[in-house]
Amino acid sequence: MHAGQASSMVCVGERRRISVHEEAFDHETTKEVYVRTMNISLALFLTAFFFVCHRADVARATTISFPEIDGDAVLGHTKILSSDAFEGRGTGTHGEEKTVNYIVEEFKKAGLRPGNTDGTFVQAVPLVGITANLDMTLTFEKEGQRRNLNSKDDFVAWTRRLVGSVALKNSDVVFVGYGVKAPEYDWDDYKGVDVRGKTLIMLVGDPPVPDPADPAKLDPKTFGGKAMTYYGRWTYKYEIGAQRGAAAVLIVHETEPAGYPFSVVQGNVGERFDLIRPDKSLGRVKVEGWISLEQARELFKMAGQDYDTLKSAAATRAFRPVELGLTASIRISNTIRAINSRNVVGKVEGSDPALKDEYVIYTSHWDHFGIGKEIDGGNIYHGAVDNATGIGGLIEIARAFLRPPNRPKRSILFLAVTAEEQGLLGSEYYAANPIYPLAKTLGVINMDSLNVHGKTSDVVIVGLGNSDLDDVATQVAAEQGRVVKPDPMPEKGFFYRSDHFPFALQGVPALSSRDGVDYVGKPAGYGMQIINEYISQHYHKPSDLVRPDWDMSGAVQQLQYYWMIGYRVAEADKYPQWKPGAEFKRKEAHREAVGDHRPQ
Image (cartoon, rainbow, N blue to C red):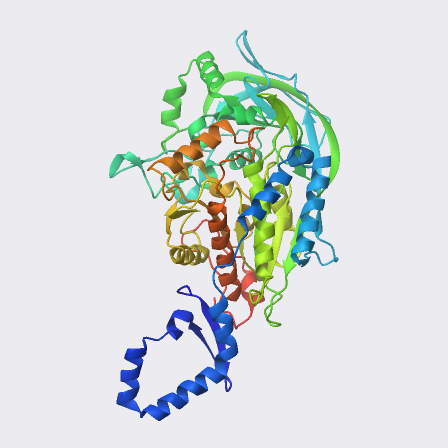
């Protein structure tokens, strides 16, 4: 058995919680206590009575250990889903049809119930696909000087507005530093300047504020220090630009703070997707985009400014927006189509009639980039690690929950979501249109890209310390003989980049965990080496394929960890909460919905 596993035991009307390691008494110590307080026969009688009264629940508790997970089965799913036949699992393509059908059939084979209340395994996700013309030119002018930037080579731009075309005509260009307005940090990059109708150039990431105690480090009390906050995400940059009435937002791409090279941005110039929103996305800025660092330097030079000097100034609270004296012009034409995409939803119903209408959710995205630009002779973006492994793991975790006696008190929902690669759209849709109330959702456990390189002695929790889920995960990892570590690359903002995040925005505690970096039997640095190699060579490229040297023991270790966390949460006496100081909090409606038997 593993320390910390708990069983609920009932006898003669009394109910209490006892953990397995508490039940496994130190028999010598117990005997001494009984000898001093009562005779042996009474002790034996009480022991026998206790055993008879609780034998069923004790049996249940002592059998709940880490489940068997078939690594070969996970690999088998991964090979199928990342094969050429699935055409890169692009949202809104024939590859989606094959993928959704495959997951539904595997959920049925595993024994899951339909997860939708309409009796099906799917949740319709209405999307719109927007394809911009690739021959657009972004033109900057100043006093007779003109600089034309080429689409894809120098910049990547699009519009999310559901219109045939948008245009900027001589829009004044303003550098607004990091584009952040954060009252809690006494930070305002706008200083009251009216940017309506203007083109804003922003830096990626959070303002890097030096630590007063050690200027070589970042201030941990301002924007999380080294760890990225949501203010650093590109999504925030476009959102704040829209809120302030800007016409366009262009983010300067730098590989280190972005977390990926410009080639990743360049690879996403085809059809883009969005949820169909009531305002047809007319509340967004006209033009969203990225500009290469090299072109940004040249533009600042054209404006009579030095990029590095202004970048340094932007890392201070005294920074004010800088009118660059440039104008920007561009026209983007759209081809628009409606898409009926789908999340796949399966369910294991809870064993407790009083608690089965409460849920723990596992999420994993099924989509990748489909068929795209040819790179090194391939144009099918297979997405084996990202995220065929996660879907294979989701199927096998579901199977493990259905093996007796593993069905927990509360229900478990398995949610394979669409359009993660398009901006977490499938999970955003579920979080905004939940099949089961979020007020009765205890937590979300996300699985994105499993470890295919062998066991680790550690596990990484992204955003460590955010919620009580991290405490459960730390305990489970310890029972595996592993230690929990924070994200080794917190500046890349991974917490905001996967499908647990829309749930966090809605107040539901969410766990984002990754394989560790200390591999058993491997030299120091091996873990970071394979991470960096994957990001630079295979991430979002056709070469993300199943490889013959994969070691699925690491994936099994991860999946057992995920499984046990979900089981513990589904059995717990109370709902997980966000930690004090976290960016998120449960909605007020939650306390009313959960009832008195689960103290907050």
